Image 1 (cartoon, helix red, strand yellow):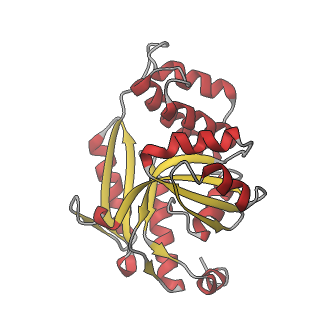
Image 2 (cartoon, rainbow, N blue to C red):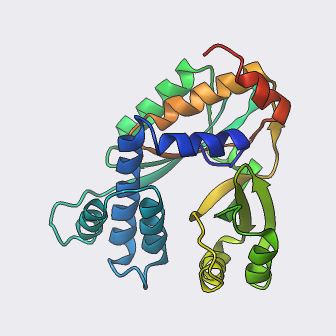
Length: 252
């Protein structure tokens, strides 16, 4: 789940190290294919592909898989699949807004699977535009906290960074989406090894929830993330430190 709550950051790390690794790899490969199809196979001239490959390497996707995905997306292997980008909107329990980003080669399957997962987990689908107004598109760059905040600010302050926040073991930098390439380039030039740089939906209005509600929202998000067509799930759920501690004691 994106949105980078403390729970989401921890869960993302877990996903890269347990049985969900293969599903994560499949989504990374799909991102690379789409980026190569849209902008060509030259990473230097295709910032979206550069970031997709960079993120995949950080999450230990094998190099051979990356190379094949680039060639397949660019049409060099002749067996590329055409994916469609679709955004669904809805509500999770406790009035938490949900944005569901899909990449699919079958719109009907994606729509049916998303609706089923949302309905089975006490959520509701919403009309286009009825949820998205609660989010803003932002460039989000994740930097390990081993780099000092002063070092990060010094590298990026003149390159469009709007905010920097320590979440768990990482700093989260936000910027205008048009500035994300400039900002991550400034970090690279300053010797700062960032984890990822993506354009995401960041909530402008957050909903604070109790532990039981958070558990239900998490169950819905995890059900959506299990779907092959779903790439990212964004919510505006706010979870306090106290609720995080309580979540650890609740039965699953």
